[in-house]
Length: 164
Image (tube, rainbow, N blue to C red; front, side, top):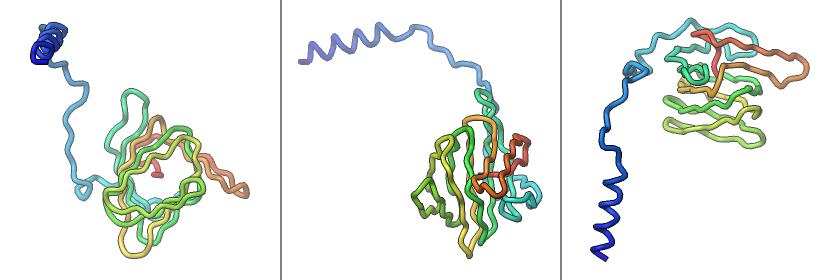
């Protein structure tokens, strides 16, 4: 058995590249605490939670998807909507209720959510504390509201585009 282990280790070492060098980074290092972010002004866009704020952190160079923070005021609601591209969310502060399709989930700091493209979802932040989330999108941001009485499509990948 020991001989076999030595043979496997020798084969693995021989297969490894002889000249391993670090690649040049394509991005600069970035560290931020969400409490120190440069938040945009409170939002007033119809169909979005009144007072929601965003802080743009970057854009994924592979797919154009924004990476940003969103702060939802306590007691706010974000209408049922969907996106063309998947989004990935981490709750950083507060409690958030998300409806994904037919399922409701109670989220708290540290919760991670994957929202597949096309999935209907809505957000609620109960009274008590603002909700802060970190969002990464798989492509440019768009917001397609489900309510047939007032269809609205918003596509806006600008630095302070609405969250969600």
